[in-house]
Image 1 (tube, one colour):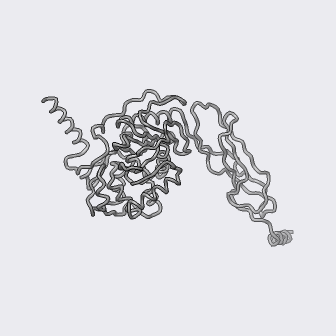
Image 2: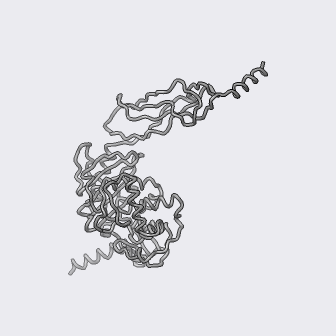
Image 3: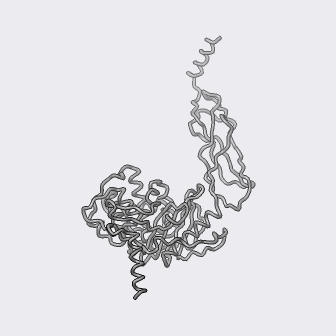
Length: 403
């Protein structure tokens, strides 16, 4: 009896911490008992080429800026995605915020359909009103299905139309093995994706900096503190540099996770699909992220050109035009690739008017140990019109007056 009493007392203390007595119950997708259990230490990150012990059916590690795959295992195997489906839902919601279809202060009224979702939820009542900001908290932090559908209806009028838009967006991102049937990730036949496709949509989502105001929050609340929210992604609390992103758990999908983290300017996306336990997905993602940060480094290289560098212009109203380097070169390097990066400048000695702003006149190539890593364009700073009869005549007149 003492052992049984101790077990009940422990459970009571755990749930009291996670959800104060005055708080309205929030149903989340994982066992709340592991909220304050730190991740196990991963002693080694593994070297490039080494197989990582990720206990899941499939996984992938991708560098977010370049989209380069750093590690993968069965990454193209189709599987049920559970609530990591919401990553695509959130992509469309972020776009709606960007283009003004929604604002964070937009008030959304919960429909009966949204309130009927079940699963992970904040128990919205039909007719209950919340702002987009509040619903985003619920969808991102607590993975609330009802909040996600309410947002989908606010964007597209119905979940069905919203899901059509999700599938169109997936195709545009090259997610060729993905089919969405709903916007929540609840198990349904034909609702599938892959670890690779999840990485692609995760990369797209973290391109919207606003999402990190939600995905990095550990605890928050709604309804004036009556509903407590705890992030379903424990990496937010226990992994240095974690920026999100989304968990997923159903009987069909197993334990899934798309985890993002940023250190020293490099942001990584680690996806784990169909882990057998909650710990499998978090430990697997941590191994992938540690592997990436230990073995790779990210640089944004800027060409070193002399100040006021110019190119001669033939038949123009000006004899020369100032040029500059275009965009920086985003470069992912293996830490083992020791050596000094050098640059080679290739530039036209003369160009013919008319000259447009931003016109390419050469390139700067970056090399490591003689091997080209990439290049950036050299472009013109301003336009130079072509000489015409009127301009030449005016110049002759001005020259005569100076004599």
